[in-house]
Image (tube, rainbow, N blue to C red; front, side, top):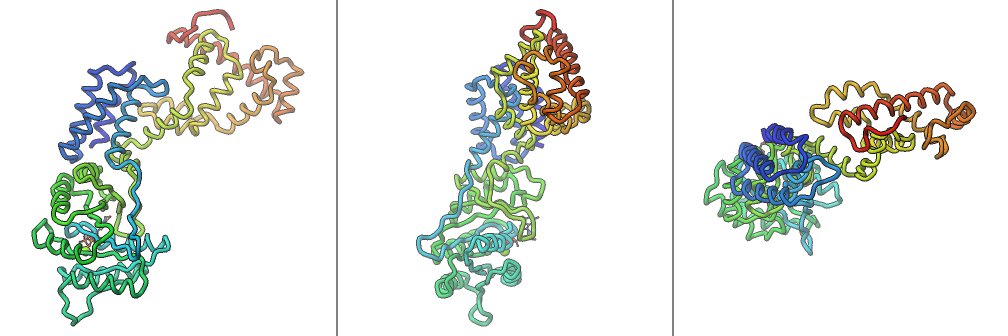
Length: 441
Ligand code: GDP
Ligand code: MG
């Protein structure tokens, strides 16, 4: 899958310093293959790769992120951009009713969506009317009536024995009914075929001309992959549409269709449908779709958090202090707070691919214990934090009383701190941290 491919690609970059052009080219080749495998249309892939390349080459070296994370970030941002950036809301008519027409192939999920959208809009205080204009399939009108009943929204359908058969006529009369009964929205469900054909397009265009919709939503099954492009182009040319709804996102589709349809037609994706029940529905979120396509939601949130809390200068100073054995309790507290802002330590390590071992070791670190350490250090004076050696017996008693712990816990903390400082200094020397190799502790 795309996510597997990208994970491998990005793992290969981990641990490198600055991104070289060769690195970027090699990575982009992999991403290109991955996107094609995810059924994204070729022209879309080409443009996407070109954008990522350009940005990666011009990117400044991030102080907060390693090169691998930086590439994920760029890929993610470009994906969000292609998917439309911000969520687009429905266009409302200046004078009610707002008319929304649904178009798409048979089985795309139009009728189901009509019910979902009706319920969603009713929940926002609108008074929608559903209109049954699919008069092709014998059971289609009944299906919409069932859906409408579940959504608690009335359905306008042709009266039996009243010349059933002309969807354009039904649509026109439905608008009159909506005005009369003061519905502020009209949702027109239309017929679809298994494949694109002229008759279908003509009928949809006739309904469009009769009701002059404020929105025509092209409903497309996210599972159809490459076919999404040809279908979308046919509907764009035959009927035209102002927005897209993706359905069946509960399937295993990676989202290639979303990327292609959006890019090829230039129309925004407004809603996403993810199941057969009325509740399986949401407005479309480009950022969530991007992370679905990447399949790296955890990594993306880690990157976000890392950027938020990272202070490069401070880290550099701390590294230098570790190396020279001058780390203070103040630094210790600051580091602890910075790490804790990133969430419980165990979760944090769980987000890093390949950090399994470290995670096991850290699983023993108790969050409550960290709380107590923090309370103790807060109870010290600045002088004590800067130079823990001055913390004598009477000071220990004062700190213990102040932070509500036993004196033995203060002893414990101070002793551990000295041990840790010594150990970190030795390690810093081995790994070549700045400042390593100087004076005693
Ligand atoms: P239409 O021909 O475009 O009106 O499509 P329908 O609304 O009748 O849906 C066709 C089939 O797909 C039905 O069995 C629906 O229950 C199902 N369906 C619609 N939307 C979704 C969805 O988001 N997820 C899943 N799993 N099934 C869906
Ligand atoms: Mg239908």
